Amino acid sequence: MFRALVLEKEGDAAVAHVRELDESALPAGDVTVAVEYSTLNYKDGLALSPNGGGIVRTWPHVAGIDFAGTVEASDDARYKPGDKVVLTGWRVGEVHWGGYAQKARVKADWLVPLPGGLTTRAAMAVGTAGFTAMLAVMALEEHGLTPAKGEVLVTGASGGVGSVAVAVLAKLGYQVAAVTGRAETEAYLRDLGASRIVPRAELAEVVKRPLETETWAGCVDAVGGAMLARVLGQMKHGGSVAAVGLAGGAALPASVIPFLLRGVNLLGIDSVTVPYERRVKAWGRVVSDLAVEKLEAMVRPAMLADLPELGAAILQGGVQGRVVVDVNG
Image 1 (cartoon, one colour):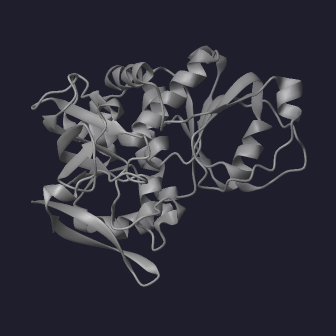
Image 2: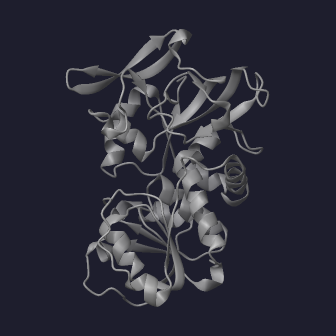
């Protein structure tokens, strides 16, 4: 038997309850993992919402798009009992049962070994959000970004992706401008390494001019929508924006002018189906480029029973940093 936060349909709504389940309830897969920690991401908030956020289609369901733990059983030669592993992506927690449980059964192809230098708790302090932030930084570097090019903007900076992006970029020597709509997060962001704070209101207004003063050498954008459109018009010539989220909406009211006249690049970051080799590389970069003390400063501990409330909060922008879920707590 194991405990899980199970989403069940009650009338027209999905309701979450902590349940005791038999291992026979687990879905098919190659590897059974004793989960130690999971985390909370924006997509988890959607899954925990009353209608499953449009990403959960079948009930009962176990959400949690990432987890870290120890292999209990494996039909795949790459993993053996006792191995420490991490999972992010592959629509786990959406169409496949996820990490909000003490056990998970998944395909071996979805796992990566826990990187040396990280505990399972630290891996989930990074989680999908931090992994995505690292992919965004790697993409910006691959398109020519260096600290000498100028300031890098991070939108949604106090959230999970933004927090890790600020900390990583600062450690790599970049001048980081962090966008936030909450004045109370300024000290937190400066502690992570932000060199200046940009009030969200300064970028929230849609302007008619397709080009503004060249300001940012690069950007990690977790907001999308009108703010992304505004940022595109402020990029330096040849600069790149790594788009990682849509908290501000999926529509992009932008002009092609920044792309044509300034050679701006808009880079889409997909953290769900990243090939194994790039996953391993990104996790290696997390170990080398994210200071442990900065990571710990982001952490808010939680247990399974806390997740329905926290899931609602993250959809409203009310969660700072990284929620780490002790599924055995």
